[in-house]
Image 1 (cartoon, rainbow, N blue to C red):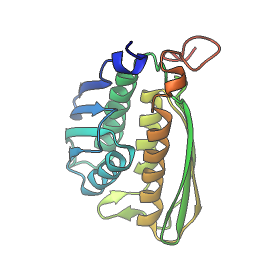
Image 2 (cartoon, helix red, strand yellow):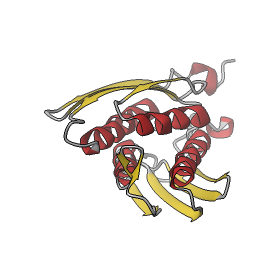
Image 3 (tube, helix red, strand yellow):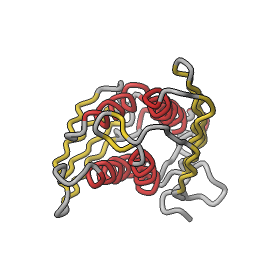
Image 4 (cartoon, rainbow, N blue to C red):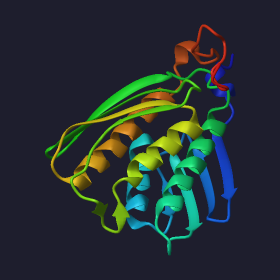
Amino acid sequence: MDSPLSNRSARRAEVERATTETKIAAKVNLDGTGLYDVATGVGFLDHMLEQLAKHSLIDITVKAEGDLHIDYHHTTEDTGIALGQAVAKALGDRRGINRFAAATIPMDETLSRVALDVSGRPHLAWRVSFTRDKLGDMDTELFREWFHAFAQNSGITLHVDNLEGVNNHHIIESCFKALARALRQAIAIDPRQADVIPSTKGRLSDGS
């Protein structure tokens, strides 16, 4: 007799987003192996999205064209929007997932924590600060914009805390790695409730 896991359809999705400011295509496979193919035109953002894929085991493809001659804001935010929408689409009704997870990740002198609820109710609590305005050519204030866009469009309640750290590169990279590891756990299917939506309400996907 087949189990609910063996009958589950592939959790994959593609999203295309086009505005006067950006054109973005995002593709995810939630049950992947951490493969990535990322090209946003923003080198540091590419590096962070590669970390997200590698440590979440989500296969991620992101191709972005944006108005980088102005600044990196639109490309960063819209990449978070498109990737969040792809994750939400791939999750479907969120049946069988663990739903809650947290990860605390060290990186040299830095320690960061992400706690999340794949609830359908988007929220970002951001307790991360930087001592530099830029990493490479990227404004450090844009990292919050990416996390906010991702949380809002994936339907995830997301708490991000940097607990220790001096090096700004280490601080944000540990945040992305913590997000990755928490996501990996939260979206994994619990075989004990593989055909059950993890809510007493009986639904998660629309935020009710």
